[in-house]
Image (cartoon, rainbow, N blue to C red; front, side, top):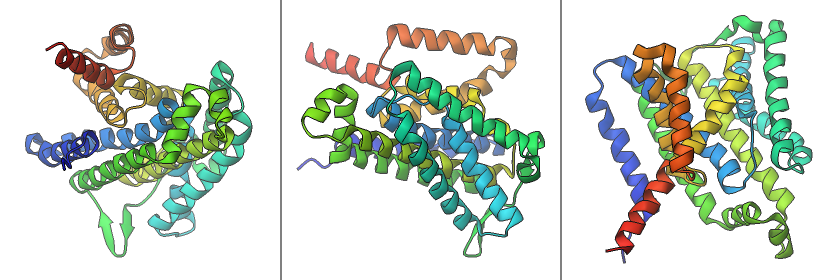
Length: 315
């Protein structure tokens, strides 16, 4: 029996890339960029479950990222809660918030849903900016290194391996979810909500479930991002941040876990590559997105794989 399926092969390739990539890193700057890319990839995997598989748009996802970051920062600095406990509590609270707001807004469709999620993100951003006694306001707040059981994660190199393991774990969890009955129900919801309901799928419950899962992904990454950088500001939950995440998902490939990783890596690395032509950065990024949507409307990875399949079929 052939044990190397596209899923296991993709995970194995991802693990190999993460393992060998540091060979080309000449200083800690490369590790820092790589960690940010992997954090974004985890975020995009969770968001792709919502957008790509369930077909539900979210333009306020950076708000959940910010809630996770600030939840950990406030609990660890003001109340002395251990970082791991603060991270899990924040994720639980964010999951509950997503559940409460998700039930009414996920009844909406199309641009109405997009505007509702945008509103959630804007509200979170405003609260973080204005509640200066708790959040530090526009100036932000600092927090200590992430420690657990006497072990402290310090330095970009150590964070690289932590982020790498978490990325592989996140991809594995997402792939298992997609292959489960829940994943099949999500794809049915995306295809046709009416058709899914006819065959007995509780579309409302599944949409809320995937909304909560994607929000928890964002919260966990937010907590780790805050500890890794040691400082956060409300801009972490800005509208631009939410749009950036959606762009990563669309660029890499909707309904593609590994496409999410590719999109996140590309759009995290591109600003660094284009630093020499900073005044043209937005124009170049816009051109890349336009070209992708015109010539590869399903995203980079699905389009490339479809092209390879056509070539093999034509032989």
